Image 1: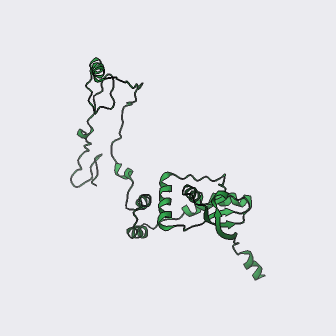
Image 2: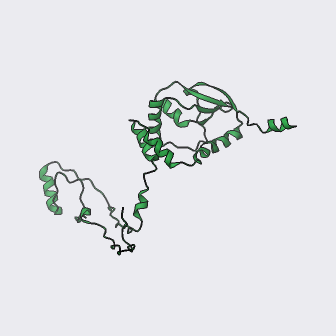
Length: 227
């Protein structure tokens, strides 16, 4: 009886094999809800370039669908690879859907130990731009810019969208000068766009936010805190 209960409690292995598979035969899962932005693909490309294949893709032998590794397959196709390493599993169609829904989200549920992560990042070196961007995004010492906007005033800007835009072509400099005299505006070689009637340009560098000074021995009211 004890052996039967022990056997019933065992976790089944659904893995049936490992090996290289041909890229042309791989089938993307029609229910894959993951989308891979450029930043992710850049990081993945850098990882594959510097470290090689570290993780196999996952394929369900009963449907031929990819369960995990769509981005790696996409990058392999971009690089013109003929075969890639894979792990084959044996799942029903219903089990495939469940696996597709939970595999990545379960991984994402993990919490981070910021102290250990900071120590790890201090010991990692790479010259790859994509990987460097990924590592920088993981740095726990980088704070959210929104945290520094506490008690700052709301920024409101008037609607400066134009009613209509029109590109005007001139055959020669004389025609251009004549047009600018008619509209009464001075235009130089550095001018890219103009408004009619002319708009007064705001000089943002001359603007600053001055909060109320903090009272001595206490906190200020409505002012900026020290950085």
